[in-house]
Structure formats: C-alpha cells, structure tokens
Length: 420
Image 1 (spheres, rainbow, N blue to C red):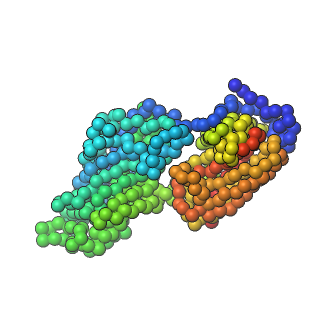
Image 2: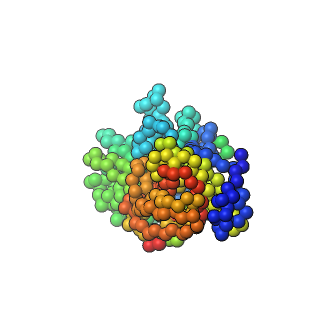
Image 3: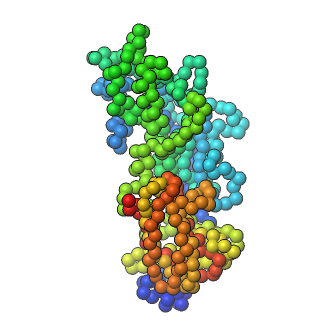
C-alpha cells in the first residue's frame, strides 16, 4: 500500500524534499538471499595457468610452461555456508552451517582431482543454501593427512631443455579450509556454482627452480629433506595459490593459522575514495539495506524520490526500550585494520534527538572503528566522522540505531570511503 509523507513532515523538510513520492513501504525484517532460492549447488575444481593478474583463466598448460602439474588430488571433507541471521537461529555464526556431508552420512569424503577438472553435481544435489540467512561465504575443507605416504603434487619441470618429473610433498599441513566470498559464486539460471581454482603461476612464479637438485632416480623432490628451501617457499605459497578470499589451516604440528589471499582481498577491499556502502544513494530503492526491529521496536521504511536524489525514510511506530530496538543496517563493508576511513551521511527527523551510529561485526555486537551519538535535528545536517578499524573485516556492518522514541527519519548520501 502506498504511503504519503505527512503534511507536517513536508513543511519541516521543504528545503530538502521535492516531489515527495514514495515506493511501497516495507515493515520490519528482511532476510534471505532470494536470488539463490531453490537453485541447485555445484562446484568445479581445476588448475589454472594464466598470469596471476589476468582476469581470464587459462585452464590448460601451454607448450611454453616450465612447471606443469600432472596430478593433484585432495580429499574434500566439508562444505559450509557462513551467513548473518536476523531471526531466531541456533547457529554458531563462526562455525557456519554444514551443507555437506549430510546428516545420514556424516563421515563421507569426496576425492577430488584438480588436474582432471572435476565438476561435482550429483554428490551435492541435496545441498540447500538456506534462505533464512544472508550469505557471506562458502567454505570448502580438505584433508591432506599425515599418512605414511604423504599427499603430493606430481608434474614436470622443464630444465636445460629437458622435462624432469617432480614431486611436491604436502606433509607440512594436515587440513585446510578455503573461504570464498559470496561475490565469487557464479549464479546462473538454475545453479549456484563455486569454482575452486589452483593458480600454478602464483605457486611458482619468482622461484628459481633451476637450482632444484635432481635425485638419483631422475626425479626432483620438494620435501623436508630434498630441496628443503624451495619446499618451504612452496609451502608458504600453497594455500594463497587458491583463488579464495581467505583460508584456515592446521599444520603438521597441530597449530592453527589463517590468512587472507592478498590479491583477492585487495580487489574486494576497494581503492581509496571508493564508496564502500553499496546503494548509499538509494538509486536502487532499498537494496542492501536491512530494517531490523526487536525488543518491542516497530518501524517501516520506504524510499522518497527527489528530483536529484533519493532518500531513505524510516518511520518508527514503536521505539522499544533501547536504541537498537530499531536498526537500519548495511552489511558487507570491507575494512582494513590500521587504515583511515571517513563516514559521511545526511540525516534529519521530525523529532530532535540522538541516535547511535557505529561500525561493527555481524557475528558479535562489537564496535570496530567508530561509535557516535549524533543529535538528529529537524533540518537536514551532514555528519562526518573519521575512524580506524582495529580488525580487518570483509563483512563489517554499519548500524544506525533509531529506537527508543516514535519519530520519522530521513537519510541520504551515505558514504564510507578509505582516505589513507
């Protein structure tokens, strides 16, 4: 049902509003990823020989390649989804939801050959990307193992005009999980597909493999005891050679570690002066904005269309007992620890009073960067705050806590930009 801005509101904001027409009002919570609802999930696994900075992948090795992978196999043990939720869910957000293996066969594993370029469909046919949550990441976990005969990558190195076989032993690691950003998932008409790609050039470029010693059997081995320095260098590159956002692992000694894949993260984190708030100008209606009410709060949101810009209107009908009883939220803001950012937004209300504006995490209610309590007046005012996040986070969340009183807010031109 179409709602109208009140006469009083239009008078108070006459200098700001022109042509106060609004889209359909939406109340309360928005959840889920409708674009992936009822779609099948598949995953393909392959190796890639393109240059590390190229956007187009080259799946096969050319005749000029000096390092060719012939056999690369791993054991897939888990597929998980990581989501934010705004409804009652008994979910450990840090651990995510297990999508595979299924409950009826929890110990199932799936052998994967990267060199054969496998596409997994049938084994994942019952995977359901739950639409109650807002998808953040897909995780795929592999068991490398500590067997008597370690998992290895086999291939050929061209040296002195000859092709010499090599073996890279992966016994420095027990298991690992690759975490893929939701934007890395390919959504087609009937399928959600995840591509798990191992990038050969990222694995070996810059290493002087000509120094590798050939064993008495004519094989170059990279292990703790053979070509040990090159083996250590390959170990340092192995996980970041996958085209994931980040990874977690357990090494041979049982120690856990994690890191971001730098080139993927650099692309996602945005350049200087780039607005990290998608749809901060509300040109795409209320896309990417969540209105969350709780603890006796109630509100409606709508888009007000001006001649030159759009506004978000939030009408708080029940303030609830806390400022966070009504929240206007924007997720998936990528911030880097130690960098300098500025948030800018324009806002006004029909009733003067303070709100809470903060940047935090979706997993815990923790501030990461700034928390301010601006007083919102009855005429439009631009607010600017500079801040430095303490934690690197690809999924930081902007919170505008609007509860505790019945009133109406208008918001426009929301920006978070990296300035240093």
